[in-house]
Image 1: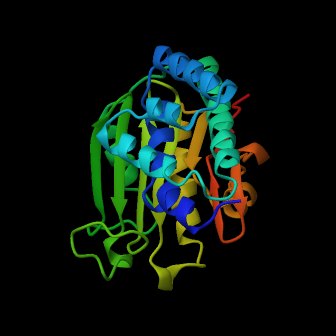
Image 2 (image 1 turned 30 degrees about the vertical axis):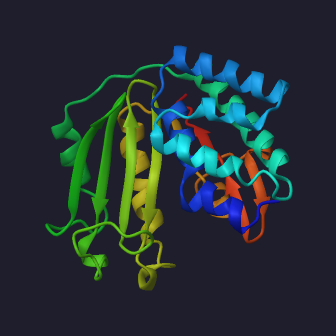
Image 3 (image 1 turned 45 degrees about the vertical axis):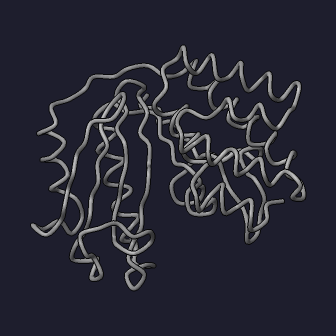
Length: 248
């Protein structure tokens, strides 16, 4: 369904994740109700130019217009409507299920992170405030031989995630293991440790954007409904993987 040109804007330029992140992770319930109504209107009476109303800043509006300019590409409207319907379902879930949990002392989280697998003094940990919680960047410098102080996609051994206390939602933003170290269970050991830390903090809801379907379903028990999946094969995009933890 997807082709190279559509995939480039949706994935390489990150339009899909930008829209999902803003409205699912960082918008309050009232804003989510409003944008869901907006999506309903677009789907009911489809007009490509209405998509611009989903933009929330100059960058997102520019990317949406670039995507609209490709409307003559095969399956364009079908792809757009499928994405909108999936986003609508996710927003409805958040409107119903998002609830705040206690926000712990950051020093407790910092101390827990020093217990990560293979942790040593070379690890770089950065914690930043974001809307509704905190964002954490973890870099395993020992397993990142090409690290030069900056970020390069798919190069270093790095794990970035958000603890959204205002929604009881843990969100994976980015994770990667430097190529020579892949296939040794390093990434999974980090994921399991970090998710266990989040569970101990009280999180019961977990989300990951554009997941590799096989890995997140089989190894980590995330659910990826069929209608969240856009395309298959070489060009594909998945809106979100999601799971809940039941403590009872």
